[in-house]
Image 1 (tube, rainbow, N blue to C red):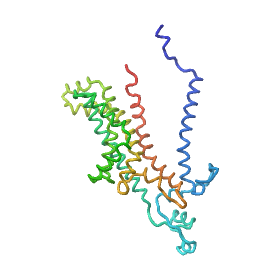
Image 2 (image 1 turned 90 degrees about the horizontal axis):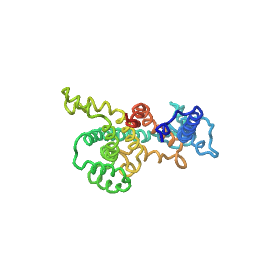
Image 3 (image 1 turned 180 degrees about the horizontal axis):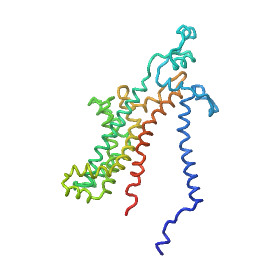
Length: 315
């Protein structure tokens, strides 16, 4: 059979239209839960649990106010004795015969997520880059066995090591600390980082470094000035995947933290309102929780696309 029989022809306009419709439909379906979460954050507590669900409603910032404050219910007489509200959120809370008694713990938990998520991502990518370069360029004894061992740590479910890690952290004094969570998430993400980045380093010709060494560069200078610039796409893609894991991780955060280093994932589901969960506050917290990852991904979107397709087409 001729080679031409296997050639891929250009898609017809009808096929392109069908593919576009399917992609748009899939995107809309996957975005419906996110849109619903964002909308719920602007509903009042009664509207958030109404049946049938309300699609059209009067928007309010009550969910965001409840997210960042703690409140207590008071009698109407006490509310009137306070005089006019000084701020818009005071007035919003008083409409439900409540007063603000202080700040909630959400801001602190959110900052913990930022510190632990981005800190562990930086360490995982930094150490993974060095390890990937070493595995790719140097003769490492038992290289294949070491690479498999690194990969095997990724296959292990976190719950299998949760208790041993809890006991170890309790003895070392790392429980409920930022350092302990950063080290743990770095260790979990390092296997993914090494394997992804090694593939990118393998695609960079050695001749580039050899030419730099001939020009008088040291091995480290050649790595920094020649290899790293060509690894930007891979580093960006790896950083996004590592951040998503560290940002969304729930099991370790629930088991190993309770106050000082508790992140947002274990805290958001327990936001209590009158009669149970405060769903608008939960939705508001979830919406704000999505923002850093979305912004980080959008900023690195060009490198991410290049990183995903890097090495896919060989010349």
